[in-house]
Length: 400
Image (spheres, rainbow, N blue to C red):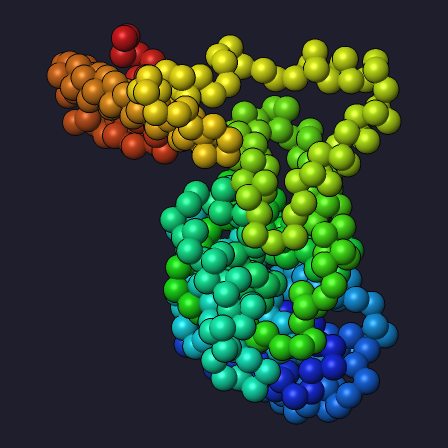
């Protein structure tokens, strides 16, 4: 797979040389390193030009903002025929084995679209960030949730933290361009990939994230709170159509939204409910009635396990914890049912193959090189394998 490292640079002459070097010195080097300087007023471009002799593509543009620059870089990577894109902000660093460790994950899982890793925090001078600083404390809190399923973990916090921690399929980024946010363009991408079930994590620190006075996250809270609200509304709008047709997508979105109420970032659930209430009011009574009537409701009561598993003495588990428990029980039961189905299909396949192999017709046919299709193990699941074998057997004239 061809990999492009894309680096948006803005006034980081002090750091960008080390950032580019960390990409070039990977144990599994990238095929392309593409940099756009986004209107820097310092000598960043001069630093970058020094890497052109080592194959780094450097271009400049008037300041267009981070999201526009990233989208242009992704498009450039696509034109270069790169299957994967790794983003590196011009003040961060990759650790040497990042790509050697991460790229095989995409080869193993064709559904994987976005991959992140653990990270290390560094201060303005590249040293270890003061563990008592507010940002260090936030990261400890965020990663204390390690082990939660991704929709719940991502709902509580943007634990990957930065676009420098994103490796993604190029076609996925082209289909999901970065939005015009100042703070949350990485969070929207990560949350959507989690809800779609296309997110992965390598739980090793493979990127160094710089925390200094110029990080956009160090700001007054009001703009970030408003942008988090806008992101929640945009995410709902983006997924509204697909969720109607995909129960799994809807279920993961529900878990993500429930978890946002426990956010340790800047999400204000009361403001979110106010926004959705205002949207509902603007929709009008007729549209509200239609939405309720058309909702893809199931045939069981939500959260029924809160009562069914209650011991009759201790307080019933409610709120987010109760919802998570109920959802976990549902998932475990679904997994149990799927395992039972797979076992039954595997047994059926073995029995059917044995019946076919025991016929005189099959034995004679194999002598003359026939029935090769019946020997193939086609399909991912036992159910698919059984169905494919039955179809092949039918075509070959073996009755069930």
